[in-house]
Image (cartoon, rainbow, N blue to C red; front, top):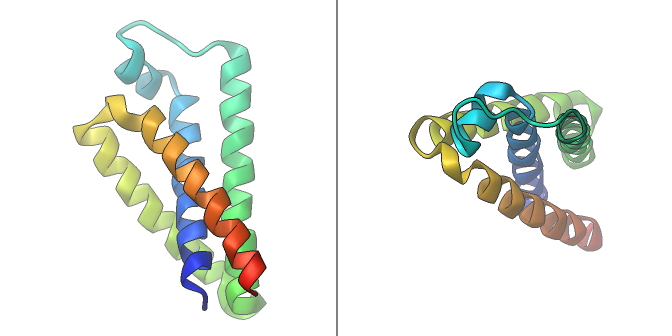
Length: 118
């Protein structure tokens, strides 16, 4: 198992959960102020980004561990990322956008390194 692959999967999972969080009224209002809602276009964009990021997490898990263990690895990675995001939203919700951008960049960087090394 590649360390870059696992970190890439974890970063993609964090990015996906952050995108789904930004598509929700409650978390969007925590960041942008009470009563604010994402526009329909922003909501669709965040949901699409979240789906793609979580699918990338699954694909990396299957690539790293095969079809027998890969889905389980992906689910564990999704749970770990969700725990990180719950803690972030509980204590520092205003950092969610920054967190999503950083983890998205790290995910792409480590994903490229994972595929280049393998």
